[in-house]
Image (cartoon, rainbow, N blue to C red):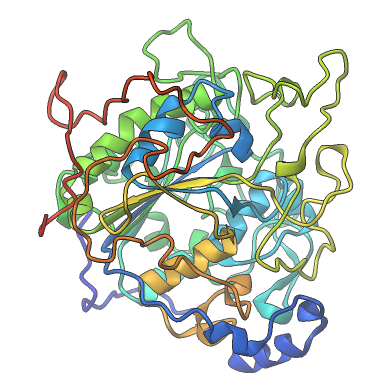
Length: 502
């Protein structure tokens, strides 16, 4: 892949119509904001200029509440203990719905959950009626694939001539199951579409519902867009198609590294399945343990490669997050442990799913469902996807720090739009799509980018700043955890070398 400089024009790239500013005015007057507690004046209350980050890597994991991931309940010490030493843990990061798909759509476009997206799209077919609604939303009483008029972050990056790529682990492993040259679509969404679009198999654990690009005609109808959606490990030239470079190859040079990289692990490596259908990267063909154990193996493989890359060294940002919060109980099939004291082993129903059914950030319900995530886990829930937590690593973030400022997927989208200087169009006319344009919504601020000078700092053990991620402190005699190994089989990085000016 050739890097596209900000001033270089793209040719052959269609320009789709954006929602007009007049629609924004109508949206603010519509019932969607009644009772939300925000006003247009609130939008200007957060005056902050993000740092000059040049490259972003987003890794989206699956179905874990904060209490499952960051309290030691599961075998995931790399995510829970090691990585926060290099960056910041957001303890109040929230999903926007249940179940998976609606969260990916919110992240990519700011569209709120709809009936079929909340149900993980039982039929891969076009959204109907697909007409514009208030707040930059789309009327979607059925279907999951949004019309060409619905913009995504990827389209916005195109308009700014900012390079991007979406890396999908296992995509195309099973010939004919999904099209690796057309964004990984599971078939044709017209008419009745495709039933049950994709499930993990022993040879192909790719899941279309975890790929944010296959749900928008603004992407799947454009071959140039789909050229940027590739298998994580790349794909050799075949069948008249050129070779597709994977993440490892692209990381070798800053010129070949996209400015924005979306990374979707397969259904084992993303922590979704407690027992993997296929390879969990352990190297043992008889080991099929999944969950957070498998996602740790994935992160241990890829995070050091990203951190050692020239692009990360030059003002990079890594963001590891989850789509939604699932309760940490074995009965849901994605946890290897039960939350002691909150689940009765003699019953088939947990007694506490509090972190999995809450919302933040004045989240609005949208025109298609009154309660995003409603009735999840057998409870009468509040709107939202629960608390997942998120870990961010950058030279502009002090290692070992924690933020309790609430953020959600709409906040993340707004943060990326601000980071890449997208200032036109969108719901608010200032570059923010869908509910990312909600007045008063807070993007990542100085609580996240808390090292504004960008000077490299030593990794900080958990609790060294007096704040712990879990409910109890680490034992004082617990040995320090080793940092990721960048330089050899027995070497340990003694500090974060995050670019020039150390």
